[in-house]
Image 1: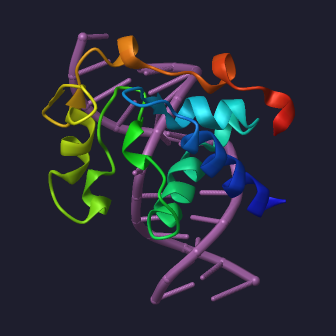
Image 2: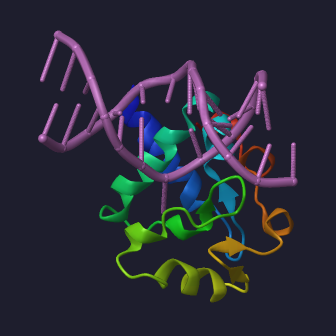
Length: 112
DNA sequence: AGCGTGACGTATA
DNA sequence: TTATACGCCACGC
């Protein structure tokens, strides 16, 4: 069911620890929709006005803040990340892999 | 109903 | 290594 996919995306994003980040692809893969990473971003776009999800902790594979435009302001997303101890330069998280958080290694697939 | 678009990612050149 | 091409599929028009 497609709505479940959205719910699962929200559930995963909600579990991202403070100061850690992940990627759309990682989430998509974890949910079994590896080839539909775009849908993850789409789901998050919906989630923005739905609930308090740390959507700013979800970046693309390069650690780029590709969706900062959707946070209303222009530096809101960056400020949020920097507020969590991350460094952002040119819309890109420095040491991305260092702060990367893989759902598959920290969450139990069985609860999804 | 068909077509273009997009918070992505991988494959090719 | 950078630049394009393409697959994916929900949504809006």
